[in-house]
Image 1 (cartoon, helix red, strand yellow):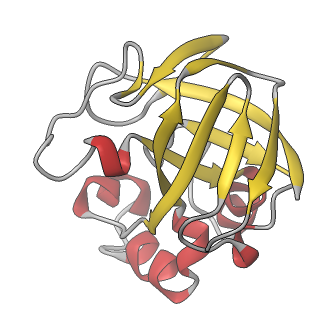
Image 2 (spheres, rainbow, N blue to C red; image 1 turned 180 degrees about the horizontal axis):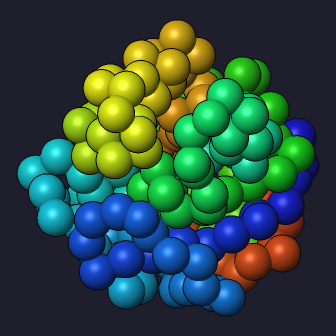
Length: 157
């Protein structure tokens, strides 16, 4: 399983996260990235959030105004089928090695994307959980750049 990193996104806290050309990844996540609610988001088990650009394209087709970073993801990928992912899978993402830890659960911070349809995107992401993205821990840090390859290195044990 192999794809491309379409976007690397960070913010000092809150949404949206904005695309940058590159970021240094460590066990704490991407350099320059922060969280308004660190008791909920971030930490070693949720250092990174990955979302497929294919999911964003589907959501846009359903009327949600989403772009890379608007769902809070750090890495937007193309070519990796998120429906096939499982906890424990390891990926090389640029220079970093990451391991999937859990599916993301959509929260109320996504409410501005609903355009008056209270809870609509949250319900949509609960219908197909893989569309909400995967959290990952960082096993080996390094630079991650837009255009880098993301590739499965180990399946879950």
